[in-house]
Image (tube, rainbow, N blue to C red; front, side, top):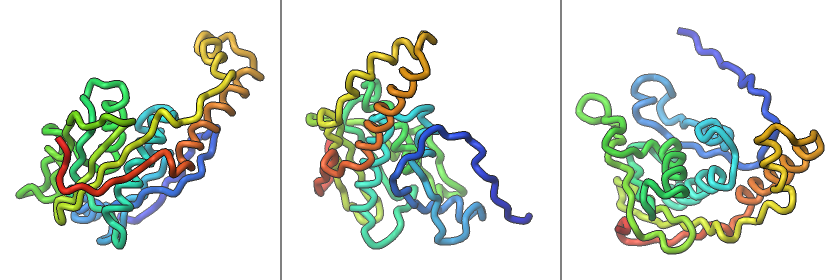
Amino acid sequence: MSKRSTPDATNWAVEYDVEPIRIRDPVAEALAVLDPGDPFVVSYRDVVKTAGHSCPTAAGAFRLTQVALDALYPDSLPVRSNIEVRAGGPKDDAAYGVTANLVAAITGAAESDGFGGLAGGFGGRDNMLSYGVFGDEGVQFAFARTDTDDTVVVTYHVADVPTLGPEGQYLTKIVDGNATAQERDAFANAWHTRVQAVLDDEDLFTIERVDDLPE
């Protein structure tokens, strides 16, 4: 079977400036989806596709995962099936549930219904995502390497995310189909500027090394 690339034909209305996440997948390598050692390249666009929209929550999920993986794998590529994730709040929380879904899409970490691996469990990612009650500041996620037990907690300081500003008033009119072109443009500019701020501002994310996954 010859290799060929398929261009992304999506007519994106906005471009975001942020480095992608590169992550290896042992199953993809074993099944010759990727050459050995080559990573998947997960862009913020991929997260937007998964979420169905771009917003500070989606941007925060991407960046907090990126911050965690950079810390856990300073000298090598992160590896799916070796990354355990624990959310700091309940699954039915509006922030934690959505964020966990996006973190899972990047890391592969899943609950009990996740991929169980190839024969003998090779590359399995089930039971690698769980929920706790330790997120008492912002949105907090813990990430652990199962091969080294290195563990970090990343806090996304959502209270410090810039506000939308007066352009936010146009959202209702946009949803109702009553907004003018100028109002749509003003809202879009304010909205995407806010999202880019999340992708840019390193101070919105803090990281702490811990001994174990917090409960």
